[in-house]
Length: 256
Image (tube, rainbow, N blue to C red; front, top):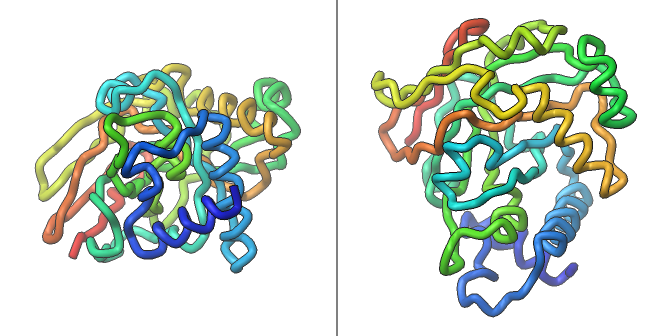
């Protein structure tokens, strides 16, 4: 597993993630894929990167339909890949750059478990806001699979955050918040927090349950990307991307 993880990380660093899935000879379960993701996380932390939080992927019907998968997954968010609105993204630093617009939350407290989270929703959240999530949108296997998705950190390649994070303590308020994704001033999609199966907060509860299987707890100050209610959209050099929600101004990024 360590050898596979070192190969995965080397591939990622040269912007060619997941080559071990190219020829179809690697056999692993989804559980193996999470073990591989965990080992890559250990290697990234060893070289000084911090886990800034987590992302939830493939949770909404539009994304599951787009990828041909039937289950949510999670991945890590690293501090080295967080940017702020107005950033210029180098398309050469990604493989098949695609974006999603979604809601994120900043945790106010350490989360003991999912039960505590359900009982204390207003204590758990410090801020909520829209983000642009960045992806290496590439599958190298013959068909998209949950194991490849998980092993490649759920396609996550970073996020663009707003300049200011909006203080929100009641996650119910996110249900009717609207999110709008635009490319070159053309609206690509719009949705509300209700488009997620159990709303954005339900995504955080799901994540806490999944992490408990690995002995991991969510921590104060971490960010959770709660999953996109809209599909992934491919972007290319020259594109201007904007994601706006009704409680924060537009988060923008330019692709070069």
